[in-house]
Amino acid sequence: MASNSPLTFTGGHVFILDSPPVDIGQIMKGGFSGIKRNFTDTTTIASADNQETSIPTTIASGEFSFDTNFIPGDASQQELVTLRDSGALRNYKVALSDGSDWVFPAYVESADVVSLEIKKQVGLNVKLKLNGKAVYTPAA
Image (tube, rainbow, N blue to C red; front, top):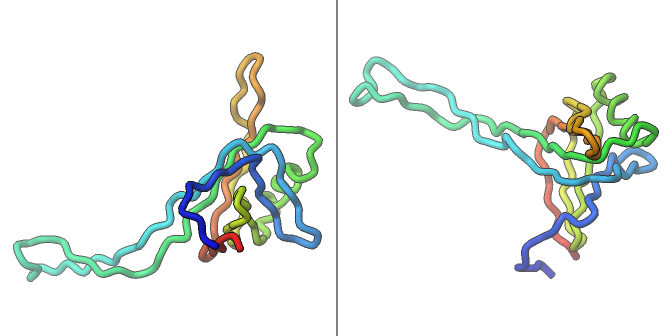
């Protein structure tokens, strides 16, 4: 049954859907961006009032980025760096607290250590470049 309540990203779960699936822990926040319609310019010298014109073409898949606490010995974080370096395509799942999820194919575009502040938790920012559509499945 679909809920009309806001969804929460409690505890944060992002999975690499290999065999077996890898749970990337310590997720602090995440989100999709850059999913947009592309357009091709169709402007000609005869365009009305010299205005630019265009037609819709493809949809840019965008990216999913997330921040996690950096844990040097964490196997899932080491796997993300390995996937970035190898350029391997994998399927990912973002699980929400109500049991709904998004599944999508993606490449690891970046995995950067960030937030190097005195007496603060060191962070890791990961960007996944989608290679196709993110499919949302509501909770059962």
